[in-house]
Length: 303
Image 1 (cartoon, one colour):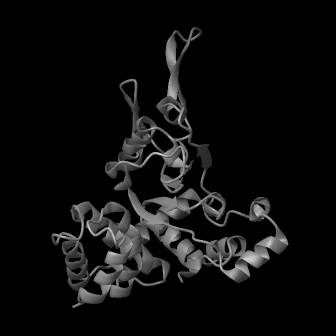
Image 2 (cartoon, one colour):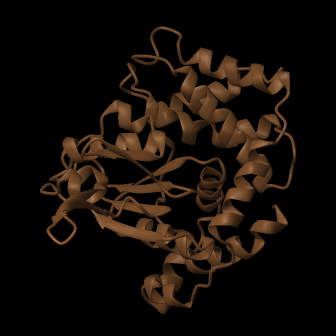
């Protein structure tokens, strides 16, 4: 692991037990300037992990509990007329934080979900004809409950595409769950976490990861994986070039997190499913997108 991340990973690993791979992918997504969708059943630590990451990275943080009666102004902000000044004054909303935790994003209406699109893609919001830049870095970590649960709305494809990765916490290992029962709710340890980085440091890490070398062979491997999703009979539509760019960026960040200055095929394989699965809808109902994408790694040759 990159020695610069050792203090970050040490604190996260002490709080969230047995989820090293999820944390590594989450860190990689942050370093790759991507947004993350954490999808799982309630109670497995999604919100705790996101909050802990913001604290440890030293990023200005805001958690927003999404509900079906929220309005876009509740997230973006609103202009209020002040008689003393004789003008409207903009009051920024929660989105004007470097780290926005959109908790249970799919409980909000599609109108509110779409209000995030410009912020996630352009790092800015437009209100009352004016454009306001968001802080740097800007990261959205959204949690999502399974769509089978009551009161949830499926995210539109255009918004899913804005998330670089979709990650699942999964249930803890038996050993970790027993420790959890013995020690109690891990959220009570959040006040003990300390910031070991800053917004400036995160920006520096992002620049270093962006400079990681990608060989022509690695680019060709990514292309052939993306092209394999476009073969008729597997998915409704294949991956777009934007998805391929996300795979490359994520692979570069994964390589940087592991202390390398060049991308290996193993880096591409490590992020492939997390980056691609939520962007695809299968035709074969007996297999999930993640299963088909994992199988591709077996038959799409590296060279």
